[in-house]
Image (cartoon, rainbow, N blue to C red; front, side, top):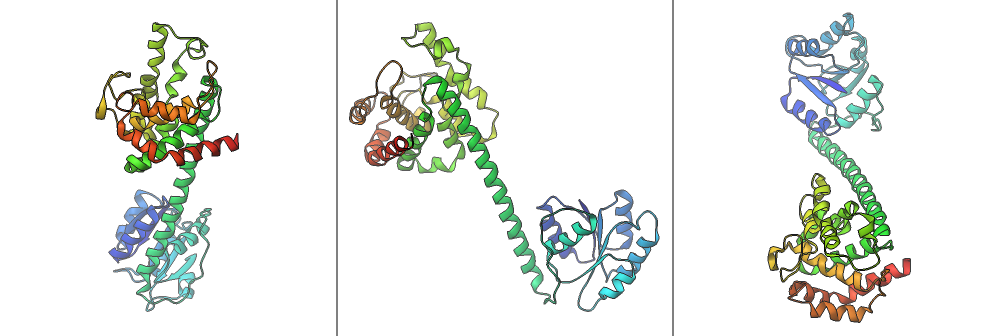
Length: 356
């Protein structure tokens, strides 16, 4: 919707633009009648808001002029007036559809304009009452806060929908790959628990969580004959399998939510502390921290889960294996975090087992 605001107060025009821009209402403004006529000639507004006290021709006279001209007589007009200005009766006699007294709430004005223009904006009409002039800034602040709360709620819904979609994709992939339905969610929870201990700042990067969840998304590009092979892979098959990290990075590289640590997890979660991993053979702290954390979480879940070719290890045996691989496969600091958080990690395992 396009609104034309005609008022000689630049502060009021700026505040109204700031508030209504947040709900995608385009606001053109003019300080006097000639400027307003030029704006109407350039692009017809859906509604006009007129102040009574304008320089030159006053707002009521301008309202009568607009209502007497064929090109503009159907545009809804709201007249604004301060305590020393016009009255509702005078505004209606001039042809205006509505009247508001200053100070006014921007959302109240928007509700009136939407009603007059036939819109459906969901802001309840709040009847005008006498207000002190100093209330105007408080009204703007309140309405901006309300709009921000709406925007946050919409963003939260979008993020939830995105998370559910990513989770569904991860579940579909792991069912095909491992035959289990909770691997990605478990390993994500393990990794987040370890991250709290060793790199809590990584949690602020939302892509980290998504990288943990979709770490093996590149396996979509691996042939089923390799992915589902029950026996050992040949050297050629193993090299092909190892490309899933690069394929995953390529698949997610253009997705805004994955820019950051999440994409590094997808590429580097099979690197090893001693440099014997893939795809880049990097070692030590060259490996992104989130990928080093995830390597321990992924190994823990792999060892304690049944696979078609072997039975699960006990939790204690898996813990001993992780300790033995400190400074070889795993970052020793992450292994220390595993020891410190083992009780919490066991609780996560029990939670998933109870839900199975």
